[in-house]
Image (cartoon, rainbow, N blue to C red; front, side):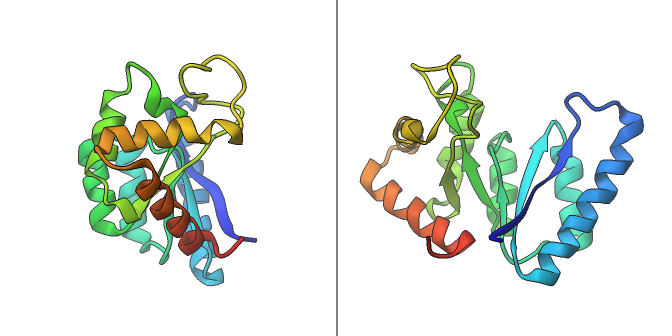
Amino acid sequence: MRAVGETGLDYYRTPPERHAAQRDSFRRHIAIAKQTSRTLMIHDRDAHEDTLRILTEEGAPDRVVFHAFSGDEAMAKVCADAGYVMSFAGNVTFNNAQSLRDAAAVAPRDLLLVETDAPFLTPVPWRGRPNGPYLIPLTLRALAAARGEDVDTLASAVAATSERMFGPW
């Protein structure tokens, strides 16, 4: 086992009367990650404020990754200040995702990961088709472009962060 999760809060399709159950479960998963010294892999959809608040209240584990990061530049700065890793998926390539690219631009290189979220969030130009690992280079290139940095440099940093978060493969 490499991580606890993905766990967290998803308010997108969940009615408000069900949010408390998610918050309670998230708190238990934070405790498990701390007890087992595992990375906490967070799913956060339309629940940024509660997710960050609960992490602060419970005390985050040593290693936290925001899976398919969906925050803006301000949230990226909060995550960076806390040492949380932000993992970007193919939606960073979408035309309407400037806020994601802005977030990626301010995130420290050593707090970045790239992922598929397969079969979802397929990068352009393959958007609408099932996502897969073979499309990671498109996401990485978009992330590097948003940051104005060399793809190979970013790829090396992402590989090192992956190993730091999840151990050697």
